[in-house]
Image (spheres, rainbow, N blue to C red):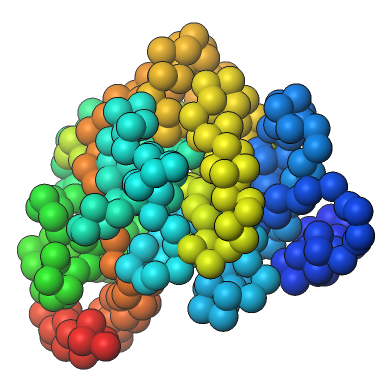
Amino acid sequence: MRRVVRSLVGAFLTCGLSCGLALAAATPGAPRVLVVAAFPAVDEIVRAALPAWKQRHPEVEVRIVSRELNDHHTAMITALSTAVHLPDVMALEIGYLGRFAQGSGLLDLSPPPYEIRRFESRFVPYAFQQASTPTGAVLAVPTDIGPGTLLYRQDLLSKAGLTEAELTRSWEAYVQAGVKIKAATGAYLLAHARDMKDILIRTGIQPGEGLYFDKDSQPLVTTPRFVRAFELARAVRRQQLDARVTAWSSDWSEGFKRGTIATQMSGAWLAGHLNNWLAPSTRGLWRAAQLPEGAFAAYGGTFFAMPRQGDPANRLLAWELMQLLALDRQQQLAAFKAQDAFPALLETHDDAFFDQPLPFLGGQTARRDWREAAGHVKAVRVHKQDAFAREVVDTELDKVLERGKDIAAALADAQRLLQLRARR
């Protein structure tokens, strides 16, 4: 997940979405107002674009209502289901998009006056496809993406006598490299065995498939990619190669600071977080590589959407704001430079910023590799039950890792539960 939990600042932000909308509607003679509902650090990206917006529309105020990631999406689900306190523009993270895309709460941007498909060729293909439905609707505009990368500690690899090629040759080689790293340095290969599952279930997805469900809403969790993912996650745990800490916990960040976690698979944005606040003292010790075994996957991504039952009088202005944020080269590059929001807009990908060496990564020009990875990622069909499916699969994996449950039995149990849920 690309967004980091942080405290909301100011009484307006603290009062939340309903307060913001009430203020927007309550003051007689107030300027015209657009309300944008977002989460960190999308709120900062929108805020940074406001000077450019004011040049176009000095008479239109943009009010940003920000919540922590999960709280934001919960509020949006409530707003869409009740048609109360709807913003004009809402930010959506890819992990939540499935819940919204298969409902009727979002406005289809494909017909006039929006005609978003005329811009399709300007976006990274998989990102645009993720916002599209099987019926041809396009319910959101992509703004940033998270090409997957393997971040690793070069100093720990050197102590273990390993090269990057040995680390990334295959997933089995990656695990065996972890054995050598642990023996030579005491460091864990990765934070949690679940991370291994999370990446492997994203590899080998066939065209038209989703992460957990096929095009007919049938669960896929007994397929070979889930079996292999569970087997390798179990191998990591049995050989005590994971620190058993979860992402964004204090133990997770301490593992990076102290060099007790040797690698982390994530979106490219994590390198910026490590540099800026997670582990700045480790600058120069990290390197970035493509994922093992030639795999390509996406971690995170952000979209802007409009609620179908939002204020019709504000829609064209809201659409113009969305275009400024997602289709303006300078705004996209500014968000990339300030917030590590890897741009979904292809015309930014020839910018010299991609060629700059990254001191945190020992001078690597890693953005070039991340750009290459973005071009290889395939769209994964989203499903309204994806979030529930992840909970089910994670629960069964925990039973395998903690209680020794048989993998085939665990996946079969997950399959049955998801079949029941998918029929709803």
